Image (cartoon, rainbow, N blue to C red; front, top):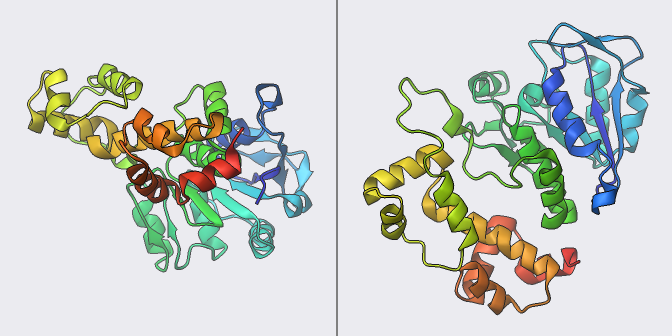
Length: 314
């Protein structure tokens, strides 16, 4: 699929923040920054004012017939309200013709109402994962992730995780450089490691979320160095055990996984923007050799570095 056309469905009970996330991700003209143009529309069943979950009304300028043109159909969050039969039918028709579907937060419940979560991995806001699983027992709900890409159906977790899912789609369709530009304009990181487990409330938080910020910045600027846990712990003035625990608390993942993701992201940029050989890129980002880079790149991105370069080289 080449992403050129996006339709977002609005409905009674729509959450304006999650609707705004989809508008921010796909509705802003960023062509002056080199981002491919998107034909974007917010659609509704009819032209009557829609009651949002925050108590004000809004009105969409397009009907559900516009959904039939879209490569990607966005489903924002909904508060304790079922979508109408017309909205469900439009979503099912989009799926049948091969369009991609992306939900944000509790928008996944609408995909469930459309029968599109059965047998499929998915997620939603961590507060709603148990209810989603109970309401759609054939779904494979993954509570701890920021988003799930199940091919034709992408589900984002709570609120801002919708931007993570959207940037993932931008990255898949148009490469890391374009996704990074979209992220930069939105003033968000182009890739967040870990999952929403790090945001689930604990009785007593045991760390300051800002503690490792300077260290993470230093790591990302020095990826070609050997970043063992003991060396990083020493730099952070902690014991290895305390450092490992603090790292997971603040990032939602392990040092090895976080650093690997940063190295893959750096490799993406070099594959797109340079014609340097893969062996050189592997050394530059800290993988050491081309075989190690290929192993991690395929595991994280699903394609080889060579295939990625053929698709997204500038």
